[in-house]
Amino acid sequence: MSKKFFNSGQHWVWLNAGAISISIIMVVGLLLLIAVRGLSHFWPAEVKTFEVVQGNETLQVMGEIHNIEDDIQDGLERKQYLVKMGNRDAYGLDFKWLDVKNITDTTVNENAIVVERREWGNLYGFLTSVTKDGTVYKKDTKVLQDIIERALDIHGEIRDIEKDDIGSINYAMEQLRLDQRLLELDGELTDAAQAEIDKRKAELQEEFLSYQEQLQVLYTDIKRDTAEFSLIGGEKITLTAGNIVRAFQPNQMGFWAKLGHYFSKIGEFIFDEPREANTEGGVFPAIFGTVLMVLLMSIVVTPLGVVAAVYMREYAKQGPLTRTIRIAVNNLAGVPSIVYGVFGLGFFVYFLGGSIDELFYPEVSPSPMFGTPGLIWASLTLALLTLPVVIVSTEEGLARIPKSIREGSLALGATKFETLRKTVLPMASPAMMTGLILAVARAAGEVAPLMLVGVVKLAPTLPLDANAPFLHLERKFMHLGFHIYDVGFQSPNVEAARPLVYATALLLVLIIILLNIAAIKIRNNLREKYKSLEQ
Image (cartoon, rainbow, N blue to C red):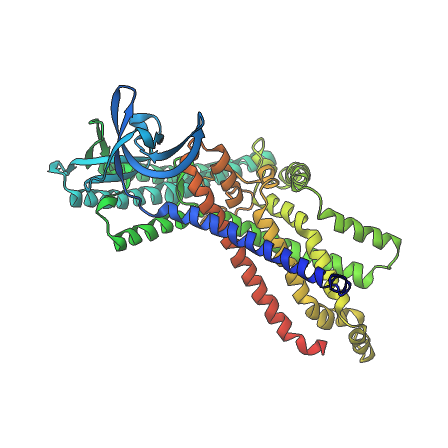
């Protein structure tokens, strides 16, 4: 029976099926892990007060249980709570491990409040009083929400002025400086040109002072209202409304209130900017940078890969040299990605970018414009990295087209180029899209080369804005993959950052899936469109 089973080859079928099943289980398990660990971070946890015995003292610790661990110490099993107690400005640490055997009592106070601050992390305590426009309100949470909403509106105005209005003025001032420097280098800086530049500078300076005056008023307004909180140890902390992002009492919240808070936090995570060394706030700049870089990479790698594949399959003489080139292209896919980063830094940034600065932008010296890591060099480096995938996939697509189709087209009087353009390439387009899908999946997840050619921890401005030429390819940018590395391994507050690592990883996977779904949809449409030609 066993001999018959092995002779029939069924064991290979079962082995393949088992390998595929294990792979699927591992992928689904990984996605579930990062989804549960990441998404659960946004759910408002219950705030508890622990009575803890330490030596001869009894301490009170207020916070939310962040993690539970069981370990063995001196041969005895013990359970520990990792409690997020916040108040870093008062305690020096955000988290504290509590041995369960030392906890004598646990209580839940409905008046406990959690305050998310722009600095120093969360505050856990009790609301004592709120000062609104000079009037003091005792323990009034409604007034607290009022002053927070007012401060958030003012904060939005400040952000608009600082980033948009003053940012545009600074950009225009820098362009004027470069224009002046270029005229100096060309020997064309006449008195009239200098006067025109000075006039424009004066106008911009006047606008700048106007916005500065508005900012001073807004900064005064945002500090008008304050709130005082008492910590579990009795300490008092007074916060200005402008330093509060949100305040809530999780022990009083029902299911629907918690659900609203949950989606509010997810919205903040996706659409807001990071704060507190990237351990709080959102990741929108990183999402934007990742998607924009992948799109630019796709625009570069697709025509380049298709042209290379068409030449090798349709025009090049099939001989030892072509076979060697084909082997070299296949082997390029196995080169470590950091090697591409080093090449990109040396060739694209220092050589190509430096040459562009010397030839076209001499006025920017000594500060380089293109001779420094940026979005365009990161996109080109990843295009080079993923080029073998597109070439191999396109070549396979071209090889699958029956020879009779080419011969039929030529027999009807079409030239080779017309046959290629109107028949062969459309029929091979699904294979090109397959190559692009694989390229997108790899490019979106690469981090190592990007660290050398353009990605940064925190970019002050997006590569796309309202200042001409609107798309600034020379700017550095944020990337989700690097954000995961930075938050997970470079953050000074590792425990606070760990859930964000899972959430950001899940977001990166979802973006890759969305990009792939879009490409698969296009590929399927192309496959259906040209299906009749293959029959």
